[in-house]
Length: 116
Image (cartoon, rainbow, N blue to C red; front, side, top):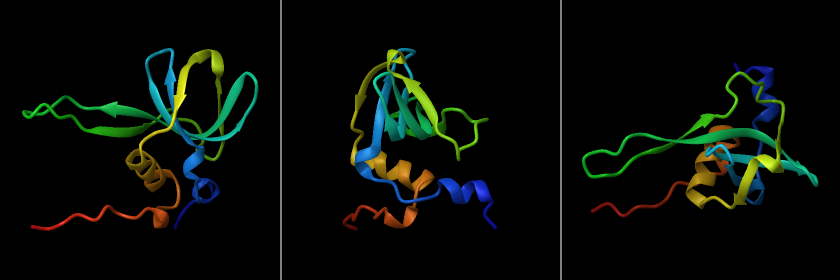
């Protein structure tokens, strides 16, 4: 059975509200913007992009890790604009993965691949 906290933040997300934040500290964070002001962005369930070491072919996997693992995901977090280098739109693949983890997975459709 899902806990009450899970039910609060498990909802349908809008693609246009999901952004990548390039932080001054070097972190890259994907989060949903729920509100913003002159000095800050209010975001829900921020996640850091993490990469693993490249394999023999030189490719590395990218994953999402909680930005604030001890924070309650039902609450939003404030990012001050002075701590952000830039805000960009993530790829559709990253948005889909973020929504699969934090939002409503029923709205994510898998990519169709040809089986040879």
